[in-house]
Amino acid sequence: MIISNLRTFLRNPALDQIVHLVPPANPRARALRETALALLDLPFNDLVFQAQTVHRENFDPNRVQRSTLLSIKTGGCPEDCGYCPQSARHSAGVENEAMLPLDEVVRNAKAAKENGATRFCMGAAWRGPRARDLEPVLDMVREVKKLGLETCCTLGMLKDGQAEQLREAGLDYYNHNLDTAPEFYGEVITTRDYQDRLDTLERVREAGIHVCSGGIVGMGESREERAGLLAQLAALDPQPESVPINQLVQVEGTPLAGTEALPWAEFVRTIAAARILMPKSFVRLSAGRTQMHEAVQALCYLAGANSIFYGDKLLTTGNPDVARDDALFAALGLTAA
Ligand code: SAM
Ligand code: DTB
Ligand code: SF4
Image 1 (cartoon, helix red, strand yellow):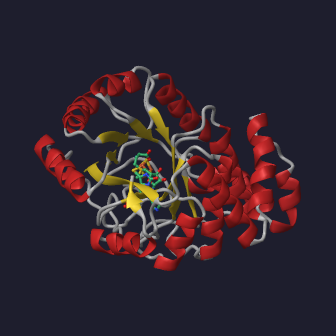
Image 2: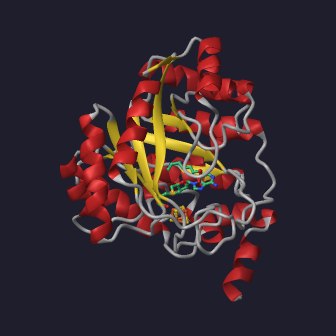
């Protein structure tokens, strides 16, 4: 009760300046936070121009990398992430399913490759894998890798040794999001803390796996808090190879359903600031595209997004179908990386 009152007190916009003075633990993130906020505060055209300039210095601006997602273990998750339809604590109507068999995963990966995806990302609704959960996933990684696809997993928190096992099986990327700024985090998730996430990212990095880490915007956070998320991501050393920026997909039955929608320009600003702060990372325009107008997606590409989730499903919710994305790529002259 005291904590929740304190949070409400600290979230009072009039106190933003004061809250803002509370330094994040990492000095690099503290400095980057000021830079991130200054970027987000720029006039839109100045920000997008700067982002496109940085983008051109580091990438072919007309090429976009495409990853396809598959939920290999859906629902029944013990964690309480306020955005997530797969939490057993919410009532979003997502059933607790068994792990998919290997042949079904391979079938989906082949289809993804035929459609033109270069990376296949397998997600599980776990707090983290138990030893016996990891074995079948290692087989999936080996088989998907054999197809000539880049492999990615998102399985929750990893314990000592698990990242090494995944690496030996042929895992190229591990997705683990910081999700939001440290000071907003407790509003969204209580069953694991920010440091747990940083620890998993450290294990992934030390095992020699590429890091995919980003977050979600539109959860009711302030612009300062979006700057805080970007600063934490940009402070990772080295910076993540992939940075998914998700727009909250509001699912009925989750605590965050009904949150006031983020204005589209604010989403584009977040992409642009991510591009400038992490010039060599693939910035992924991630969840939320189904509800997003083509023109807004085009602005995201202009602002430096160069990766998407491709295929008509994310994990449990929809994504634009392949035909809609192919039409947008054709309209913009974009090609798959
Ligand atoms: N259970 C694992 C974990 O949380 O690390 C892996 C799967 S989890 C679904 C992967 C990520 O999906 C979350 O960290 C979150 O950033 C994103 N996500 C989940 N539900 C979402 C939603 N409704 N809208 C946007 N992003 C979402
Ligand atoms: C990420 O940043 N976004 C993806 C992926 N990493 C695993 C997941 C989005 C999930 C959206 C809600 C759903 O489909 O369940
Ligand atoms: Fe579980 Fe991951 Fe969903 Fe959180 S985001 S409830 S850990 S599946």
